[in-house]
Length: 129
Image (tube, rainbow, N blue to C red):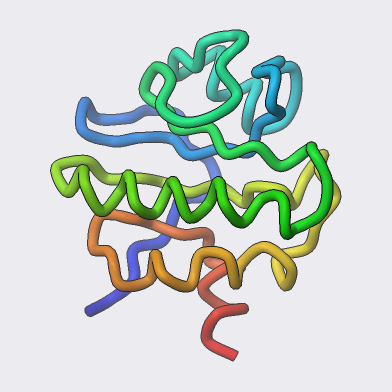
């Protein structure tokens, strides 16, 4: 099975496509991919976790990688239950939150088996090492 790759820039989503972005727990979508999610894809201000608009929010601003892991696991379970949707995972945590692909990509290892989850090329590269 060939892994789907998230495009570097997403300007449009089909009705069954979901923009997965890094957020903060209070859902203040002021910068980075969170701002794009709010402005372009209906991510609701004040919703920092889970489905919102045509998006899925994964909080990345509350501590170390260990605090992000449970939210990524919740996302993977959600994606598994919603096989009718295609999830485009952005480089969550690798912008404003300041983490590296090397730190975040391993959290998505279990997403590799899901045909409805696209990952950034940089995450796939890390996971293939």
